[in-house]
Amino acid sequence: MTSHLFLQVNPAAVGYTGAFALTGLTCLLAVARALEVEANAVRRGLVGLLGTTGVWAFMKVVYFTVPDPFRRPAYTVGLVFGFATVWAWLYFCSAYTGRNYHEDPTLRTIGASIFAGVVAVKLTNPVHGLYFTTSVQTTPFNYLAIEHGVFHWTVTGFSYVLAGMGMFMLFELYHNSGYDTRPLGVLTGLLALPVILDIVAFLTESLIKVIYAPLGVALFVLGALFVYERRFLAVQSTGDDDSAVIFLDERDRIRDRTPAAVDFFPDLADAVGQPLDRVLPRVAAISEQETETMEYEIDGESRYLLVSASSVRVGDSQGRVIVFSDITTAEQRRRELRRHNEQLEGFASALAHELRNMLQIIEWRLGIARDRTEQGTVENESVDKAIGANKRLAARVDDFTTLAKYGQTVERLEEVDFKTAVDDAWFNAETGELDLVIENSGTIDADPGRLRELLGNVFVFNRLNEAETVTVELTETGFAVTDDGTPPNGNIEGYFAFGESVPTAEAGMKLPNAKTFARVHGWEIDIDTSYQDGVRVLVTKARTEIQESPPEAQSD
Image (tube, helix red, strand yellow):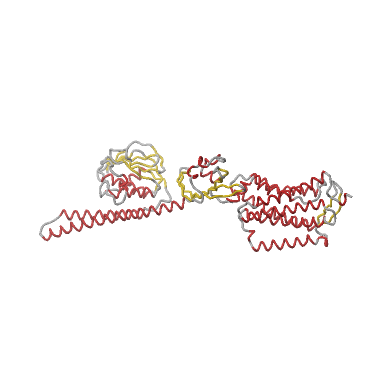
């Protein structure tokens, strides 16, 4: 009799049985794929989810095909594995999204207690009958119909709440990852498809009343592992980390990249499938397990990136992953510390040299003055030389005090009227009989005090360089100070080195001081070697806004 044999040649019977059989088979076969996932907790979650779903689906097949008295036990065992699927799902979601709920001892104890209690209710259903009752149905085929009781709907509602929590964790990760995760979102949404089928079966007779959840779980996991595996594992690997990441295949072709990587390197936007050495040759030169700091010009600003490369296995393919971390702040601080150390070492060396020379001059001249005084003659020249040396010592002390005050890197720039800054620096510097010409006017983003010291040191250098006229011009990238004195000769770097007497011992401290005040702004300073009618000092990498105005000359 067909009433006792449920393996029937009936389109509906074959459809239902085949759907769940295919679901169970593919889930169990996919376990091998899930075992290749490197993240331990994610791997365990996926294997648990596939295993419980696969067994659950096979128990549906058994329920449809075996005769009594095995149908009810098969259905009950399926219910147990179905409820276990919920906990495997939560474990996977917690691990995949980088949370630690699955490791919390309290939550695990609570979960185990709830699971044991619900399983006890399911297994004792033949006693109380509150979970489900059965009746034989002959349409659309001969099967054992299930009428769910109050316990079933309570547990089902609770299970859907837990499943919804897991989905929330996934969608939050998709959103924060910055990837185009719409395909993964659609896959995750397939988990809700069985709920629709359950509702249709409950409200109508077009579907038989059986839980369809294994179908949705199988579609999600299989789609994630086989169809969108690369994006699925990439999102989990980066999580909501803002680091820029590039994924490469075994031939160093770009397989994927995070949005942060595209922000750093716009050329990556359409670079999927291209060799890395064609898109980013500097990055391609980094070997596996190597870390390097690179400087890049991004949006007109120097940024420092820590670049690390390592081998990675995604699914059944081997490749590399390159991670970029923005360490601009840390690198700037490190370079600032190095600059301060170099500045202090250079200035200390120059100051020690000056002190020794001046003390020797003072001692020698005072010795001459003392001898002449004892002989009854007046030695004004020696006294004057000693006083001059003492003034130079005082000037060096002033230099040191100024550098100590203004030698720190400027943290906040303000818009400064350039002509006013030049006039202020000219008034406070010892410019002697020099003439000043200001070619144009405008503004410059700077620290007023440090800009004044920079200009003042250059002006004093101009005077000591035997110039008669100094011309100041605001440029698109900074400014230029030009004199008509002695042209540069020899090693240009010596002009900016503490301790060098270039062009003279007295002038030797001025351009090094100016370099310090330029560097604390983040500017660069140099001498234009193509200009041979004097010395032309160029300051660049500054932000300026030029307002053309007629030339103006001033005499001190």
